[in-house]
Amino acid sequence: MTRSAWLALSFLIAAPLAANDDISDDRRQELHNLLIQDCGSCHGLKMRGGLGPALLPDMLQGKSADYLSSVILYGRPGTAMPAWRPLLSPAEAHWMADQLLQGVAQ
Ligand code: HEC
Image (cartoon, rainbow, N blue to C red):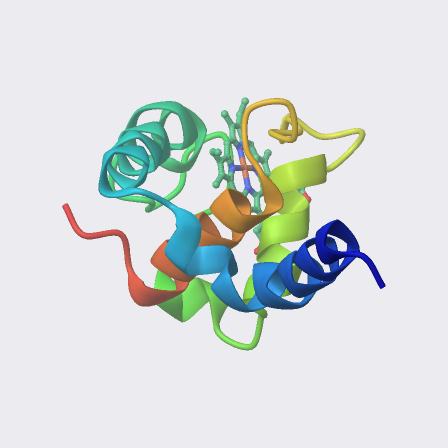
């Protein structure tokens, strides 16, 4: 195998493991602001609900970060929940789902 093929292969193996750690501190701050301002416009500034349902850890009990991040990425067709795929990578949506499960720090 060529050197570049090895590099590509090791990237494929390492990428999923590194997924959440690849997000810079600056980007985390942007994502946090997006959660409060954009998501908060429907889900409430404190995630207590509004046009969209409350997204507090208690309400999300039993739902996985994978499930929640796919709702964030693809939205819920036929409802007001938009798809965020154009703005967020899967790793970023996953990070946001983790934040919701832990409770978004104010
Ligand atoms: C324009 C309004 C609106 C915005 C903005 C919005 N949502 Fe939603 N969201 C909704 C609605 C309405 C639902 C419920 C859809 C349904 O009836 O299934 C929902 C559902 C969800 C769910 C599924 C909850 C569950 O228990 O299954 C998650 C997770 C979610 N939103 C996260 C987000 C995040 C994160 C953002 C910001 C990136 C966001 N939403 C922005 C309206 C919105």
